Length: 285
Image (cartoon, rainbow, N blue to C red):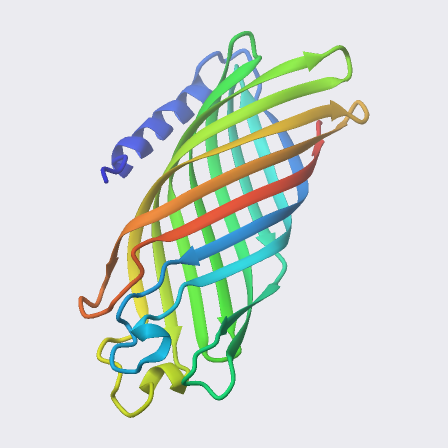
């Protein structure tokens, strides 16, 4: 897949940022900080690694599909700078640890193999946008990073990092004097890096020493293009405080998977799905 050139996108963001602070000197820059709390239904999965358990007979010689599926409780901090119809937004989010389990039952096992995972999620983003359509809509470009990490009690550790640029737009409707209803859609072009350590002796040796013909550890890159979309409601609590409630969905399928070790049998694709409900509180100076 073709990627947005990082230099070109960075130059575009820098040029637009210069316009924010240089276009119309008569207007001051304003800043609105915020705090947020959210619940996010998160699912990360990687397809089965066909033939990775060759000669063992375990699971038909395939390392099984791995899925980490939890509901994250997440806290976030952010802030937005405004000037002359432009804005620059910064955000960071961090979840609490959550747990999920993986089970593999095979006739070769005296009992099912069960591994309990514990992991968390971190996200950051920088967004540069401009208001359009009499301030009812905005168009924007930005750069985001995300990291999902989980460790199992049977020796497996997974870390998936994603980063890349996104572009999007939103539009809002004032509802009498009560608040504003908005819809949002964005397109992202991301790179994903998966590292996976598999140290459990069951998979390290199979049914006998040196039975595994391919290494099981993964150090792979991948890429994805995907959409995110959402809806939000915003209103004022007082002259200085306002709030918003939003629901957002994201789905990214990472393919073109390439491991640093050519001998490694990897998954054909990784997939992330996120569905978030967020409450944010804003303070206006």
